[in-house]
Image (cartoon, rainbow, N blue to C red; front, top):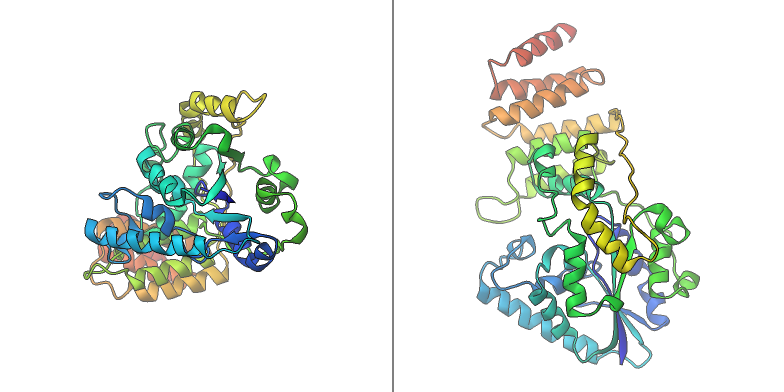
Length: 393
């Protein structure tokens, strides 16, 4: 029987880089006895955790595919079970290990019952299962997740978003997460690793992941990847929220809104960076809220370690806007102009974006301020800025 290496994330711990690395080295891995799962997805095997979700639990994976009922979900599940069984039975004797990776094992399997479904899916195929899990300090997780949320369609304010970073939220509670997985498998089967440069093997995530499987992977895999930044800068987040305020994730027919997706993709590509507006008091609140739970994780999975994460106040970076960003913003504005109604909330977002750009490109700032004026025609700052811009132009 074979060995299973199951990489469950967590989200926002370089999982995309790991998945690109595995996909790029698929042949080399196979030639050395490692099979990268195929039926779960090309790179992210998200279909596997989705298959294990409870019947009444629907997320964007299902909604994007028109799977909106228990019956449709059960049909999807039967089809995936069949594909998985056929793939496992078709593996040659030269394959000694299988690799499955998806950060959605972290975010979507919210109960031991859901994890039990995964265990049932793989039962009988593996003599050994190793669960690899990366974790990071909760405030940095929240900051990175916020940017991803905007890319996905969220328009929530950062301060409101941080209010959800509490121990009762299972997304951030590593103690609860690891307890669920160790209850279904065992603590000995969990390999918990910290997503922080000085904690990684050779200070490198991909090297560290190779070592988590087998150090020999360092010898025959290619780790030269094109970096794909999935986070947006503070500027990008601001523009992204404006887009989300005007375009929903889904259109009136319930399909993915292609206009919003196109605009967000452009902004994310042109405004890469790190969103980081956590105030020191909020950082302290989050750190202290999770301290006891994190200490429990440290004692259980790390030897001679009192605190899971060192106290490290976050630095806030100042960001500028270059001409490439201005061009991207111009294209976004062109799409936004087709919207007939701009609310007061949208107007505030456009106003702030215009003020940000006024020292870089006054014409683009003027276009944004006019959009703000359409939603808030009596706004004193907006009226004053429009006159100022017209005088300068």
